[in-house]
Image (cartoon, rainbow, N blue to C red; front, side, top):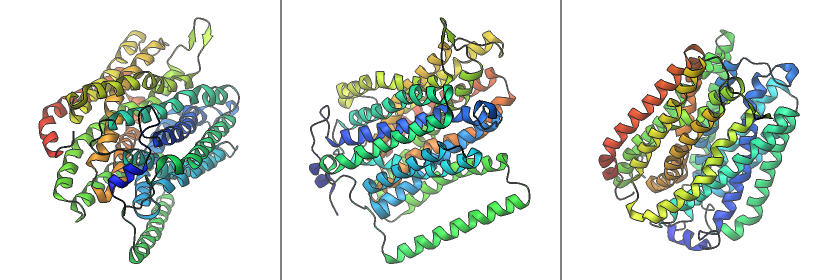
Length: 495
């Protein structure tokens, strides 16, 4: 078993903007993976609710938004599977590669005219594939730095910028072709993006990553393998039985399924915390850090509950409530999905420089999280203004959406790369990859909750919807700010 010091020494520490050379490999792997995912996501909501003669599936908007939220939740929920396979079966590096293959297959299926059944099958591949890949790429980034390396937060910010460069370009290419030519052709281009990402990873991993991601932290013995296989079979049977009962009784409805997803989104991370905290492999300091992680987790769920609605509520808002004619030029609704990554590309280097500049004087992790909730709340509160001005019916200026996306991005840069970095530092050694999966469960829980919230959006006024969520976020930010000294003490030396 390699020590942390041996792994760090095996990675060339200079070669990518003053950071480990392996950051290049992971930067461009995630660039293309996010190109494929966000390109697909930019048109998926429209594909679901556009009419059949427009090339869509003809679902109603409320159902489409609910499916999108559940899909997003399951994508991040599957990170539990990826973390388990990385920790116990393959190690993070192999898990990332296999996940990319499954994602590519999912996009290829979407590119075929297979209707609603094809959509469900493709979702299954992408959900499992993203679960294998997403959290484990970030874990490898953490492996390349010493725990006290001041470049760590900066490195995660640069990595995060790579993610968003792919996400920025995708809607203009995949989105434009999907909306103006053919949805399936757009999905096909997303598949090509993932294929390029796999090539980059495979060709450069050995030279740039050293030992990072090769080790299996907590490998299974023969007895544990038999137990895992037995539990897997029991789980599949249980799912089939429950599904059969719901179908036979006429209860296998979208409302029931969304409620199940919401319940799982809350239950799974709760079980995760309990198991890690109670494990004999978790020492006293690690238990304290896990307790400190809980309020950060809750804050992140609140943040993502707002941020992730950019692909659901704000996407349909762009399509149905926004004037897309600007100076005689016609915008595409999918292009608004590029706003979030565009702002991150612009401001991520500034934040990376700022954390390096401040060094030990920068705000603590809990304070950064609290401030991020203020910005998330403001991003929804500003949407009250166009709702009031338009009476909730007339088309509004696209600049309101631009402002909303900008505000939530400021919050995202205070929370997301910092949260990734904090997770790698607070994680118990025996649960390194699984704790990173727990970080992505913040988004899973948020979108599981959103599966219910999008239904409320259809039933209340825009002022009530945006106003209530905005105020709740700000109140939670104040609470977190007050609790910062207690949380910081429980983190046991981790800032």
